[in-house]
Amino acid sequence: MHQSGEKIACLTAYDAPTAFWAAHAGVDVLLVGDSLGMVVQGHATTLPVSLDEMVYHTQMVQRGNDQAWCIADMPFMSDASLESALQCAARLMKEGGANMVKLEGGDRVLGIVQRLAELGVPVCGHLGLLPQSVEKHGYKVLGKDDDSANKLLKSAQALQDAGADMLVLECVPSALAQQITNALVIPVIGIGSGAATSGQVLVLHDVLGITLGKSPKFAHNFLQEHNSIQAALAGYVTAVKTHAFPQACHAVG
Ligand code: KIV
Image 1 (cartoon, helix red, strand yellow):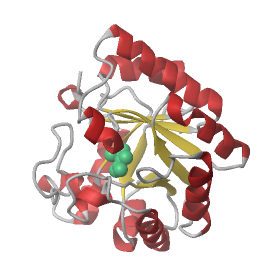
Image 2 (spheres, helix red, strand yellow):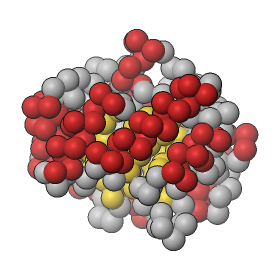
Image 3 (tube, protein in one colour):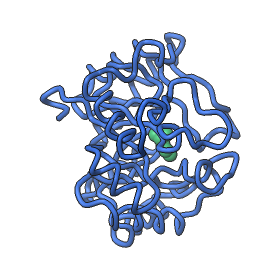
């Protein structure tokens, strides 16, 4: 899809029925995101989510999903050492049934990405706004000045060189997201990062307008224009595929 220029529609899922209906609506990639800590468990951040919980939710998603590619997030601190990162990825794939694991960060995680790739584990990187680092860095947009933009571009290239097969860019200015997408061979999935990436990801609860508190500005509630959850999910997929989502106003920079 990336090579043929078809936009990749990615959506978070946390249980069997939402995974089933999202996959049947045409969602290509289901992300069992640690955002579940906020949108399902009601925490203020993703930090409390445990590996056991990620395995549990990935298992549920994979019971409902019979066709989409499934990525599972490695939770906060699971990559504190190579050993714990390998154990985490093993559990998400062997017990959870994930097809790929995702971990946040750039240079810090290169050794882990390389080892996982050597072991045959498909890896998705995650750069830009890093929710697991919120206590240290806050929810801020990175890559706004030349220096941090260059750092992000270099980190993206380094992740690809280390063996990452996919990259999520969160809240990166749209021009930079485009530059990174063009510079890489692997697909780049954007969230709040403009329209030029190989695909888009949103949090399910934002797409259905059932988030506790405010949804981010770049998100869109597709249930507003559709009369069922199934139709809203299909509407999201169509909007991504036809480039109707995101529009320029949904980009961060
Ligand atoms: O946890 C998550 O849902 C994510 C997406 C926001 C990309 O990482």
